[in-house]
Length: 301
Length: 320
Image (cartoon, rainbow over all chains, first blue to last red; front, side):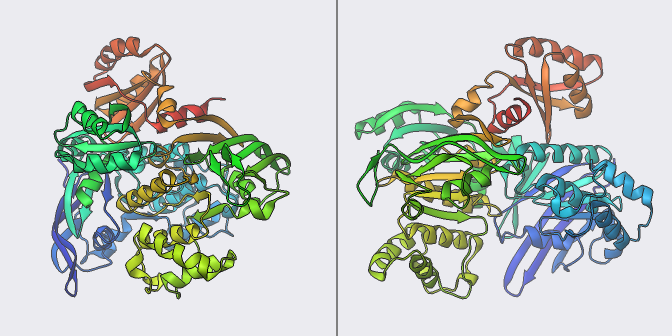
């Protein structure tokens, strides 16, 4: 068995009184695709910055690809790729020129390597396209190419498919899975559950603490123990008030034209009679499915 | 039914677009699109980059003139009664503009006055809106010092100060976390269920967001190729999506793809979604396990699941 690619032990970072990351422990194995989720300010970015050696831990340690993330930063950087939404791609340069430029930053001048990277992300034939005329989906691929040009063993993706449609997102993730199957390890931060569903394991942070880390399936099973009900009732807001007050109802939310109820032990008939008793019109009550968003909101609130 | 403020005209649809088209050179950006949106309805416009979502929105607000077709907002024609039609809109985009050096209250005042409201019109309304979005305690805070979620709420409050009948949201929750997004949606839905019921048109590339709309229109190459409630759209694929868990995934994937009744296979982390032809689920469920075992694969679970909107989107994108 290989050593884990990322090993984090009691990793802690304080800024004055504020504990941004609070004794976090986890491991990520080679070829794994892991999602890292949390509300803004939960400590995600601070964790990533420590993994990249940009920030010294106040306590604990992070080992990345066998190197101490902070003391052996150079060794880590050479082997790590980073792709972010906010990453600067030069609009006035062609696809080829952008890749050559960023390759140069890593000391790569080998044309065959650039060509190989273009192939990998499916941009062959677009070499001389000006970056400004690329669609969002193609731009995403170029950003990925730039992150991959030095053949990293570990790839950080920061909201990689923000703003792209499901078809382009899917094509992007097919590339990611291909990379993972060659042994590249991938860590994704995202706010979108559509994207988190693509990860093999998902970690959720809040207030600097790692609250859970598991497969999407296990998270749904273990964190949300109750049932999900979709209640079609009129008027909605009155229904929301009534159901919120019922014992056994954990959370009620408005969802388009129905109410989404998370309950620990409320029967369909109990809801129906409670609503009807108050004179509300119930069209139907259906069983819903647990989503990763339910998990996230349960943990993050 | 909704009563429009200016002349008390009763219209069935707050937004009505009839066969609108718009080309840029040879590109049919919007091609014969018709929309009818009622009071209280949340309509989601989803589609790929360049499918025509933004152009459609721009045609609706009159920022662009359609080559053909007509747009009516609360009964006002966008071309001939432009000012009246436009005054029905509130608009919030992902890059909502606000002045970071101004306080929350000053920002709202600015947007109100730009829209020609006098203080006796916007001031009472303003407090009500700030309370509604939960910013009533922050009226004196500079916008630049607000969190991302609070900025978004300020954007919404500014869009609401003119009492719009129609709210346009252009990818409004890009970059905000799920808790903030959940709060934002609760506000939007409240707007549609309270009082006269605002109509909302939202463009989004995210299916978890589309699934909160009352109706969704899928756009492709300038056309709306499907339009229905999320549950009806999902029902189109009922019984045709299988979930497969097992290992090793590459072998599972290859074997599933090779099956003659399998139309599509998509990896999701530790599992596969398999789309099969109509009425073929049973055959595939019977056949696939032995096919997989014969090449050394292992199956932990194989079953029919409820299709997601994403499954529907991808199927629609491939067809037609």
